[in-house]
Length: 110
Length: 276
Figure 1 (tube, one colour):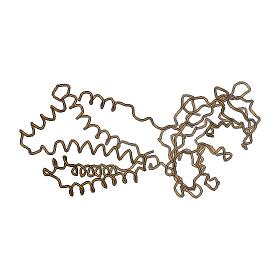
Figure 2 (cartoon, rainbow over the protein chains, first blue to last red; figure 1 turned 30 degrees about the vertical axis):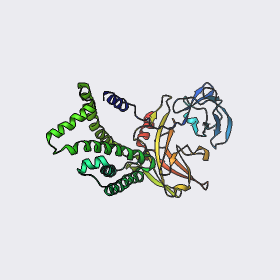
Figure 3 (tube, rainbow over the protein chains, first blue to last red; figure 1 turned 90 degrees about the vertical axis):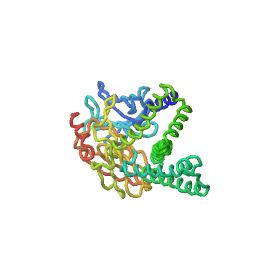
């Protein structure tokens, strides 16, 4: 009986099921000297290496493209005018940062 | 997310489960004789079994109808467990009522000896088990009572047309966006598209208007009755910005709906204002 009670107590003390939380890609950009440096990470904090990215103008026309480095980083010289950085994870889910989202001020002018 | 139905649904499932299990208990040779205090004929046992199983199936049908197949099955099993525990202890004690004291004592002695509960530790364990058995259903019922209202059933859920469908959109919890360790702010939303659900290809949500189909935002996941998405709140967002819902039909057409930030999520509007 004591053993059964102990088992029951162990079962009841078990942690509850973990809640389902979606993981989405996130992009954060900041000004570093004359360049814009961005870091692509999933919402769980893991870096996104090798993720495809594009820098586009206000009409969504690609200005330059590439893949993020091993730390999920990318950097580029900001184009004249408004720009947006788009990055996709392997599932095709996109994260985005506009020139107004660049910490320290994006250099793009509308 | 699990549909939030009234307590009457839970009570109906519990009573149906209790009834079904009680009939099945009566249909069994040993418990039937114990409860009815006479041998149960084969024909009666068949009849009781024939009534008991449909009641359990009915309880399952209520669960699946109310909470869908996934949540419903789990709830059915949960309430059946509660009913089974109640029934097992009910059967163990009900027949002793009104019996001569000597017989009751003898029966208890037999159980005590067979269950090795003669030692003080064993007795303590038994009492502990009893307390748990009483507290568990109470805790379960309390948790159900305190469970939050489903976001799509709350009064703050926003409803409107998007193409041939009617959307119902709500923030999952009415709090400011969650700020992650990286500093990014994210917010969780729940969407329901009413109308021809099979004609929906995908739905996306974002803050600020999409510039092209590929910048429609983060796609919702889930089925037509309930889709969920977590979106990033951009640093440049202001309280005057809007959430943009994009729904693509299977015919390839895109439909947009603009919902003011303060209308859909006042907490997000306050958050972005406070950030400035």
